[in-house]
Every structure is written in structure tokens, then in C-alpha cells.
Image (tube, rainbow, N blue to C red; front, side, top):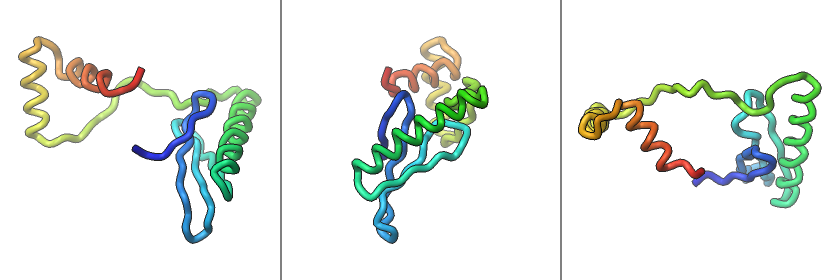
Length: 111
């Protein structure tokens, strides 16, 4: 699992640069690129919280939605064999391949 932090429904990535000896990250799941950094874990957390607060405030001022919007459709690339197996399993269950994939994702994603 990737190292992440959570604050106010936002996710922040966590990385460490050995060259610069600094923790850094960015706010994930938004349409902009907002980064933050700190010399310690506590500084990184504080910088993440401040970055989120600043970003939300900027979005309020500009009338922009802070969270990335999703259409509900996307393309995936899988092996032909896995595609065949999924289509076969969907047919056996009497559902569409889309419904089969949606069910599989729902089973793996936390509520």
C-alpha cells in the first residue's frame, strides 16, 4: 500500500527524498497540483493540513469544486485471457461485463 495521509476527505501522498533529507507529498484526487513538505513527520502533517486549508479557501474564493469530478466511466487494459474469463463469468451470472466489473470493484473498495 502506498503511504498516504488523510485530512478533511483529502488524501496526501507521502514520500522521502534522501538527497534533500525532506519529506514531501501532494494532494491527490484534485485537478490541480498542490505540494507540501516538511523536515519531520509532524511538519509534513502540518504542511499537508495547511495545504488543504489553503486549497479549500482558494476554491471557495474562485467558485471551483475542490475535489476532482469523475464521469463514472473509464477504460482498463487487461490481458485477453482475463477479459475472456470475466466475460464468461458475467454471462454465467446473467449480468453484463460492466456490471460484473462494477461488482468486483465494489467488493474491493472500502465503504
